[in-house]
Image (cartoon, rainbow, N blue to C red; front, side, top):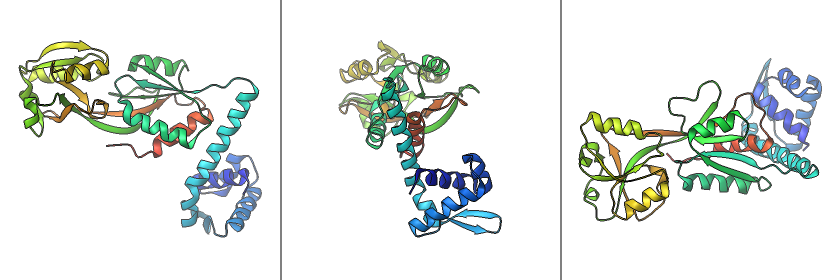
Amino acid sequence: MEMFQIRYMLAASRALNFTRAAAECNVSQPALTKAIKALENELGAPLFHREGKRLRISGFGQSILPHLRQILSEAEITQTLAENYRLLDKVPLRLGVMSTVGHVRLSRFLARFQKDHEGVEVSVIEAPISELKQKLEEGEIDLAVLNPLEGLGDNFHVHDLYRERYIVIFPPGHRLGRLNAVKLADLSGEPYVDRLACELREMVMEACESREVELYARFRSEREDWVQAMVLARIGFAFMPEYAVTLPELMQRPLVEPEVTRTISMAHVPGRKFSPAAAAMMRAAQSYDWPG
């Protein structure tokens, strides 16, 4: 099995047309057809079914597509790493992460990515969403994991990874532990810890005001670790995204009436050429079994 055969096979699977696939690969249609036929003979099963002018991927072809994509991805990354080594310019994959994104589940994805792509060095930059957008536009980072809120506009393309609810966290023994879910009305007059870095903070505060729910902030911080530590120290409750909680001792209940959710996405600048490492991470993010 040769790399050019894999490239031809993947191009044909996207185009479902040998002529268009050959044009994509800058080869003649007979050369592409001959290479794919040789690959079928080597593997011992058809990759495509020809139905007149129509081309359909066989069941066997569908089953090996993910493996062929992985082989091609690894080959591209290896080639890039070799080139970087020759140039003494080993540039890591630069990933921006919004500061309120929980690191537990994201770290599991990154660990899986590193296991599948051992040669790739990943550099994570944590920043607010406004700073991430600027860094993406200026090419200082390759990809960003963030909450696109109402959309990022035409300057960015986003792929949704997962959705998560907002919950209420509180220390063990708190009266909220008797409830299965927490309404905003249940929190009126309750001291709380204010997460200043939360991108949905204003929306939650407006919901409290419209429902005449009075909250008393006893502690404010932009740092997620401080917020959770102060809740555990019984300073007050806090609103948190469900996958951002890192202290297992904290109690939590879903927030209802209203229910608040957010979407975490991976963003990049459309039209900008990916490095093989960035392209591999984008594919990995799209195929990963994210929570929620």
